[in-house]
Length: 287
Length: 287
Image 1: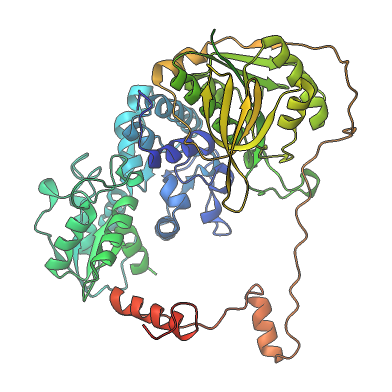
Image 2: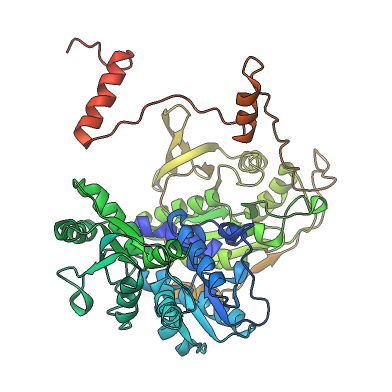
């Protein structure tokens, strides 16, 4: 990338990041459309929690549901929270993973400048990629913030009885550990805690889990590249999921959600597992 | 003798959304627009750089007219491989004929063997400036070029142009010539060190006295157009009141009747093929 050599399919992503400051190329003006008329508070000065929505939560139609679900849970738990809204830019993870270092530094510094204007106790990131970038990569650019992932925060809320999970999900559920959450930052326990807390769920483990877990094929910038060699990563993982016979696959990452949904649909199994985000499951359980 | 290429590059204000609330601002906010370089001109630059690469020598000069509004994008274009950036200072709004006066004057001073410009700009879309420049310089002009090969020994250029409806025309003309470039070539990404160098590259400013041809048309004001009037849907008067109200509530969308195909991919394909045959879209049912 430093040489300007990037597969042509990823060039559009970089251009979008450069011009519109998000990977989906929708633009800053459309960043709060998911929250339109839903009473999502903007964090103007001070709040308990800064909800970091991320590009996927703001623009991806499937992941917008999860962002709205998170808002519902935070409201039910009585948390004073806010989003940055139009002041939020892409965290820069796709740029760095695709090798566009200068663009990463640019967006990251702009984000840090905007976050520093607000006072809050912690940042809750919806997406593991944003979480990883904010937690591990922003400190070297001068932005050390207390960051937790949404699943960690939800597990805390459940443990402290801030929310009550009323409605059950009678299903066999397995968990897919997102790389940037599990292998990257060692967050395995909160996912299991949430899974066990949902009434009716029978929690199973996939053959490859936790430290020996498997990638969905979307991380590290692969989301915007084509597979040219070998077998598709998401199909390999989807085969494992279908073989294990679970009804619901819980995960906590927009890329895992997209990749595994695609993979399971492509396999056309008799009883396809439903891929759901843990935030979404909790949101439907407190309704 | 080094070949000199001049690329006319326009900076535009691209309005991608209309999210404002204020009618006096024409429903525009500051986030709704981005400043960028006209994509057609970027492709023209790419073509110039490819010709330079194929010849192994040459000099590519960028000319921009008016105040610099998209500096980072212009610097990125410099980083792609252009050698110089010339800005013609002129603050007044002007029509294509007047623009061509300034551009032709600068090109005459620089002395170019090949002049490239975009087929049209993304904002005005008049597509006139290239032709006017050619007229003023008394040079051959080829529009909507998608690929070009130089023949410096014979002093000619062979251009392939898009003639509409999928027709391509091959045109050879003598140098110097003006080519207006259509979309097609994939624009390269700048190398890291070139990008760094471009950040400090000088901008050569030229001021031309306000003389020469008077404008053919007067520009009184420049403004963003009003949003298109919304069409009010009239429901079919033959329908019952209930259905008419329902149509209005559905946002005046009338859904066509259709049937969803379910089952495996093979059975779905069979279904589509039999539908096409049945309605006479494909085959004649005899095969």
